[in-house]
Image (cartoon, rainbow, N blue to C red; front, side):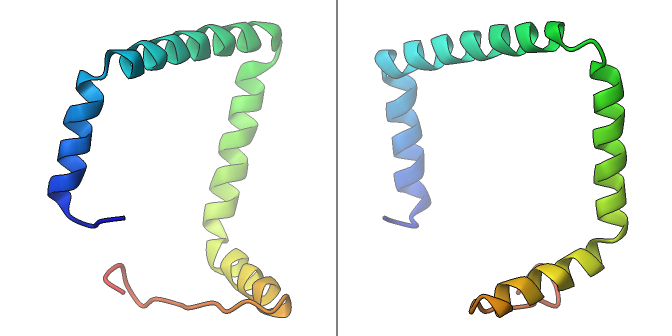
Length: 90
């Protein structure tokens, strides 16, 4: 695996020219959208579920520090190692 950005852009250009890949992606996207719409149509309380999910996410973010400490404790208890960063650069 390379970390050279040039190789990435070459691969992107190759993928964009690959008609088989484009067809497969188009089919997958179309299928995903249709399946999602079908699943949502079967939910009678979708907006309620969405609101509950938002509340759950907000609650988790509000206590993220505590949750991260618990995660680190669980990882270390199972033999893992946790590295903490002071900022995004680390």
